[in-house]
Amino acid sequence: MPFEALRGFRDYLPPDAGARSHLLEAMRGAARRAGFQELEIPSVESLELYRVKSGEGIGEEVWGFSDKGDRPVALVPESTPSLARIFAARAKSEALPVKWFTVSKIWRYEEPQSGRTREFVQFNLDLLGAGSAAADTEILAAAAMLLDAAGAAGLYELRLNDRNLAEGLGRGLGATDSGRFFRALDRSRKESAAWLEEELEAVGLPAEARALLGDLVARSRAGVGPADAADFLDRLAAMGLPEPAPAGLARLRELLSLLGRVGIADRVLLDLTIVRGLAYYTGPVFEAFPKGTPARALLGGGRYDRLIELFGGPPTPACGFALGDQTLEILLRSAGRWPEGEPPLDAYVVAVTAGEVPLAIEWVARLRRAGIAADFDPMGRSMSGQLREASRRKARRALLLGPRELARGVVLERDLETGAQRERAPEEVLAGG
Ligand code: HAM
Image (cartoon, rainbow, N blue to C red):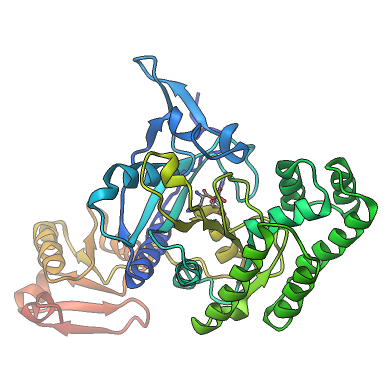
């Protein structure tokens, strides 16, 4: 019986695996340009780690099991708790701010669907030690840099809100269960206005408050861009919302002006439905979506100022985000921007007769040492078979080693695009010419 990959798991064949590496390298480069350093975390952690914080968002999705010593462990469902654990243990020796990024496989036991798998890669980027709006801006700017580096420039929007504002809003409007209120806002992007109305009634919002919020949500859905953001925040301020909403409003105002400074205000929208499923956020929260379709997020993150303390570290403000590989792939493919993957070969060395095979082996070794991507046929095919293979491999040129030419001290170089052929001196070709 043939075996298949498990449900929710994917195999990546060439050239896609190469394309994925290329994207991750481009994003690593962007993270390093922004002053972040790479951190590597384990794939399995104590299950306890996820009881400390995440909240319902991840609880049921944790891929947990007992190891051979009967210890409850889990495949990591996100990297933030690992990062908090690592930082908390070494907080005394780390100079602040700490700017770390991780590229990790992540496992979540979810119902697989388009853009959602049980195993995926997350590119995480976090800044620890700074509670300023400048630090939030740095994280949002890095998110935009990563997406641009991956080839998604112009294809996405960053939707921004603040947990303090969301909490004050719920309180001010009469929500009796803030968890359910947040979930209703979050799900409203995928549900109808009637569904939201029903949910809001269930969390205790009176009719007038439901109508008001329904309107704010509709405005959010359309996206509140830079031209309308100040008015939108003024309208919220005029509602006289209780604590901690004023702090959230003030932070959003500050952030919006700084985002203009780093040149990304044009792709940021205020959106009251962004509250994030994870329980540890304490300030600004954001998600990136394909432009105009806020359904499945490309990345998500925000400020989490109390998590390090929960892991036994000193009080340490923190913010960050994680970008997922699956939704990014869908976006890049749909825009025709999925990278090639494997770069074409530069030279394919052809043994014209079996007698030249040892020389062909020597040539590819020498070409490769000279920095040239070169290959040959280990299958003993005829010359025409080798040339067909060279074309299939998209080699730029074929180098034909034939007994007659070699006797005259030359080899034939055939340009595989134009078919043009010329004689070359071996030393010149082998030197990388
Ligand atoms: P998250 O929103 O749970 O946040 O995940 C971040 C991103 O991971 C999502 O926007 C999505 O692209 C991807 N993702 C999540 N679940 C799946 C899935 N089942 N299949 C494919 N992709 C998925 C976090 O994980 C936070 N720890 C981010 C963070 C870092 N906050 C602060 N620092």
